[in-house]
Image (cartoon, rainbow, N blue to C red; front, side):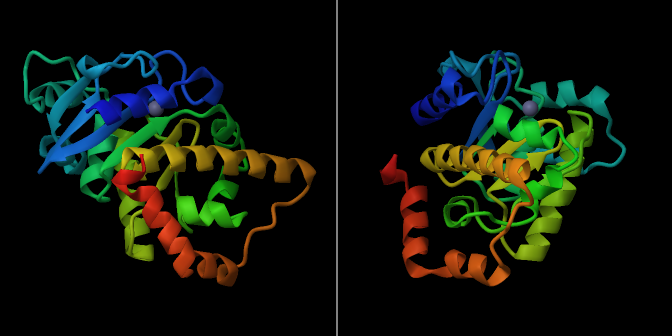
Length: 250
Ligand SMILES: [Zn+2]
């Protein structure tokens, strides 16, 4: 829990320009089918343990998977999924956190609205974010392939769109993504630890800044498939990646 609070407050440091006010949220797997997720309306910058709610994930996953459900059910399901009825209501985006933890095997999930990334996500060039890798460290930290989800109404519609794209990605690449870009909205980072969640968020912001620079100068030049694949499978890079994800490295 302490690590999750520290991550949450770190992500909200004003200099990072990732969230303002009550934007963004974080979560962590705490056991089989259970997670801690930020409460609705609370601020990441001032988060304490009391701002996190313990939630069962299965009711959330069932809601997203059920075709007949609609947004009127979301509040009830979020409230009923709490382990302790005296805790606050989980964030509406808890649906997305449940998907990332349970259907993509993440341990820690960080959702932010970084200004540098949203500048591109709110443009007609958003597709360039997932068109390829621009530099080696991007591949090491963010993986070769990331996901872009078209705009959908926050709530069930967005959760269903993320679920569809997540499954498509895992089918195609045989492993879950570390970054999910939400058009006109923000990013979800899927990590094995709080330290990795911070590192992947930082690299995603850096990659967006570099892409914006490349688009301002001319056309982005992506690494070739062979170049990106080589970085992705080099033993020294695998070692770096393991160190980055390890819990001891916090
Ligand atoms: Zn959001």
